[in-house]
Length: 430
Image 1 (tube, rainbow, N blue to C red):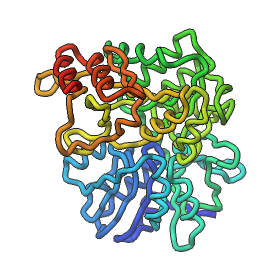
Image 2 (image 1 turned 90 degrees about the vertical axis):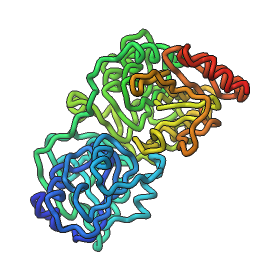
Image 3 (image 1 turned 180 degrees about the horizontal axis):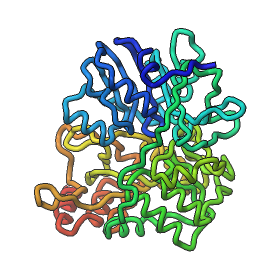
């Protein structure tokens, strides 16, 4: 049985020079990470994680080095304040093997309290940490610390992939009353541009399609329109389960009976959204949380019938190269699972990968095009041109797969803001 410790006592188990592995976002243990932030004696603490979702002083402390696989608002704020943070480029499905190679001495996660049989549900996150959590718990030279809270929903895995840890695997258990953080901006009303992009995307989503929806207002708007529309019989196979996915379920639009596998359940590897979503997930066996190496495997994705992948981007050039995680060469977010699903949806002719973005943005009061003639030197490309299928803006759709270089440029110019079309056409034809 695990030791029952306070968050502060558990934090004292780490050495001043140590290694710590934490899950992505909603899998992070709030009370334990705050307690670690109260310590000021760190000399060389290496933390491996992604997408911070917990407010803590830990990453502002001297001697703490954070290696992140995905930047969110908290990482960006910490960087601006001078914290020691570095980005580790990797597709989401590679998080597991990378963490196994790093083999942190201490692994931690948040979970629900044990049920009558001693199982603690991993709640909102499966991701790439499950294997390493179990390896740490089984290794006498390592420590597995699990924070449990009744405020987290009890969710489920599927078959041999049990989405839970048994108390016998856990070294230290910390009880808390913390609740999962809500995803900021989830209730923001869609803009006219969001709505126009979403309506163009709907042209590619037939009844019975299997859906992957990324983060952001446009994917959420697409899900809302599908929930309100006449179609149905959809499936969900998505790394992230959102409020939009919940709305589709509640509208009776999800059957999961035409998927190539995992019939009858929606499949995800983590959930992030509103408290309403978390309450809906509690005890809900219609959603299965599986490790990211399964959910984001291109072969598994491609085996779904009529797989439709929906993701966002920041910019694209006339060749079809996509920038989605950096701005002016500086890390803004991360690669995440977008590339996994772009690749997976490219394995079958009936599958489509949609990359959605507004045609413009404003900088210093000037209108700027997100579709550009070419990228500046030093630009970091997220998705190579040969992986790109469909680009969607508020002005329409550019289908790039199978098109020549010239045809790609002309198609992209046609969906750019009218102010920039001539320049883009000239670049495409040069």
